[in-house]
Length: 288
Length: 323
Image (cartoon, rainbow over all chains, first blue to last red; front, side, top):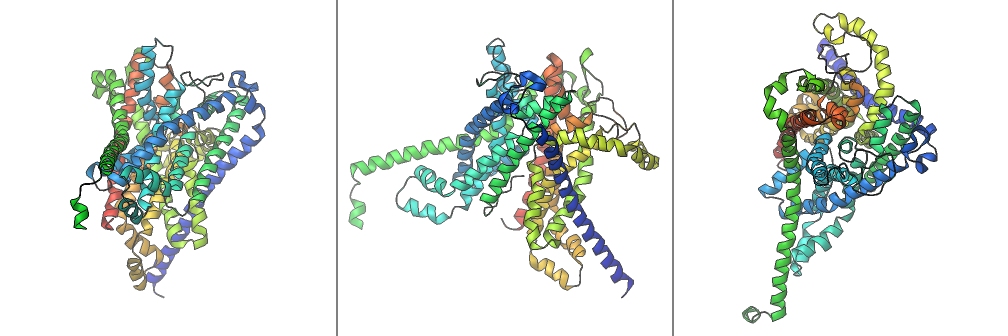
């Protein structure tokens, strides 16, 4: 065999080996990070995490942070799910080929990867500053502001999934319903939404998985709180922000609590994204 | 049939079609309003950060961009150090993540047996689902000590190479631009590789088969056929990763070291736009706060442009396919 052939085959083998190696690098980091989280988080899991609040510092738990995160995540979903679903419906059903629809779809994709810290600053400027000035500082950082910031993270995910899922609904369904004389709003709400329901729900769950782990937008909207509160206009603690503060603290006992919280949040987010993946693997949605 | 259309519609039917039309109109307005909220969110983010940062942006202008003197005590704000930090860490991340992502995409589309593709690509995409605060903790507690242990070797070997040597000199702190760049690379890996994987799959089989029939090796098919065909989308995917890297906050904040000294060495601590905001915002008042919001505006504009390019490039391939 001539030298040229040999060289080409060697180059091929090297390239293919390197690509397998690259895949191993990716998997290695995934396993490494998950392993470290498990290794440090599992020994730190204690019942007091769920019963005591962060005011006790290293003898306390994360109860108020969990409640705060739960409230803010749910409020964020309550804000972004209806808006996102309706906006996605507009894109798929009313503006699939108009210029306005195309540009909103385009900008929605940009919002999808916009830096979350800037969205936090946005909410700080439009909600935290005005409420502080209007109430003379009585209401400044608040759980409500935090959930608006989180809603901005979830919104584009829901818009995109709803849009894609409605486009998968066969056109014959629309034609059949319209030929029976049904008005379009009824067609949309009672026929199309029902047909695409599981897909739209996937979008909402994906949005939850994304916003549940966000820290940056909460730093200067919800701030944090060492005590239990359920009032949406109080400063509110959250899991990610508490983990951030505890990690920055020199006290190793707080690091242990932070690892436990990190484990809980990772399990929650990974379980959610695996769930959506397995349940609806037939329907292809990319959300990068 | 003609008799039917000649007769006026019964009164209640007419009434009903009128209310239906009205409901449709209102429904459509509501939907459009919600869709416009997406626009409002982006526009609002730009305008509000511009407004919040106006004192610094309009007073200092270019000086804000090009001065490296960041001193809250004297109310002096020059953003060069965070800007350079953001660019350098993102660049390192791209340099590392692009070849690895390409390798992953190549492996998953051309080499891996079918049963392996699904699970492996799901696993790689899980990297994108891990919250960034977890990357930060892993980075700070595990990866920084690891980097500190290999950095002396790095400066002894790479540090002696004439041109790039200066990049690898300094005390082995573990914290720094290089560490942050590597953590970012891991974070953007799944985004770039999933775009590449998807577009590689769109290459028509007949193109690849023709090339194989002419005697190409797998590598030659990928390099000469697949990559040129998907070039614009691949660049789009890389820009998408860049957009992510520029805006990433929590992971880099932990491993960057928060220092405003500009040095040539990648092993030295630095800062980035997002980590400056995260670290200082809650203690900042007055002009300091305004400077941080102005940094946020800057970050938003830069990522917006990068992501705009990304989306345009990604659309090129879709056009080619007639979609």
